[in-house]
Amino acid sequence: MLCPGIFSGSGVPTRGSVPDKEKNEMKRGWRPFVFGAGVAFWTVTAQAASQVIQFSATAVQQTPDRPVMTARIHVGANAVRSEYELNGQKFVEIVREKEQIRIMMNPARKEYVVQAGASVTLPEIRAKDADASPCEGVPNVACHKLGEEKVNGRPAEKWEFVSEDQGRQLRSLVWIDAEKRFPVRQLYPDGSMAEMNLLGREKINGRLTEKWEAATVQPDGQRMRSLQWHDVKLKIAIREELPGGYVRELKDIRLGEQPASLFEIPDDYQQIQMPGLPPAGAV
Image 1 (cartoon, rainbow, N blue to C red):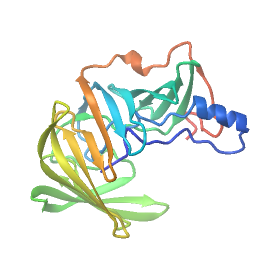
Image 2: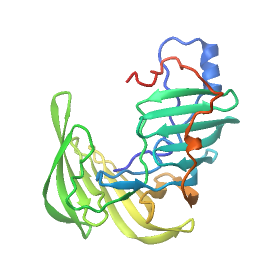
Image 3: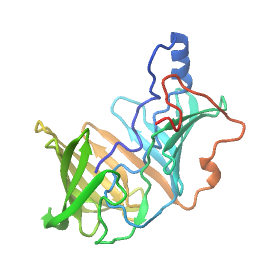
């Protein structure tokens, strides 16, 4: 299952009537583009017993006709920290997985904003338990195994996922790779499809990876293909090439426990509330 991951690009949401001067101030001082909200470019459905792999890295995104964007990230046991510059200003962002909050800090002002409802996908060492349900730990979703099939020549388990949305039952079909324990084909309720095909192994930035082709088909028949390189040890994509020349990757990866202090708010920082942004705990 693919997700935008590191480079979501959205600023702090605002709504309602805000004076122009205050809007400009918000844009200058508080417009983080969420590097750290999900280190993994893709997520897996299977949730078995796991242990987070901690590391630091430099996240790089190349976009046609735009400057290269970089951020230094730190992946801890339960949180991700990202440090970057935007319009000449430094920002720090922390996403805490268990609390589901995003903390956005402006070191120059010693101020921070807390946003509720954030999530992050942490790289994990997953127990390869073939008996575990792939929807274990996923709220409001039930699933049952339909059988076994091959997807692009690889053995896979076929599962049906059932969820509810505003009183309607939504059904999806998911094929879980028998060895890798993540989805290699998915059919969604709207008729769209996503599929992964293993092409081989390559070294990227000095790390051994598996090269996968990701293909998606939209309900209108529109197709898109991309390439992903999944780190064999980290079990996440450390490079992705998208149509149109878009590239995002993790470089200078250093494995090791990250200091707990990296994921804390300094004592001398003051919390502020952004207009239109619900406080933590409000959602």
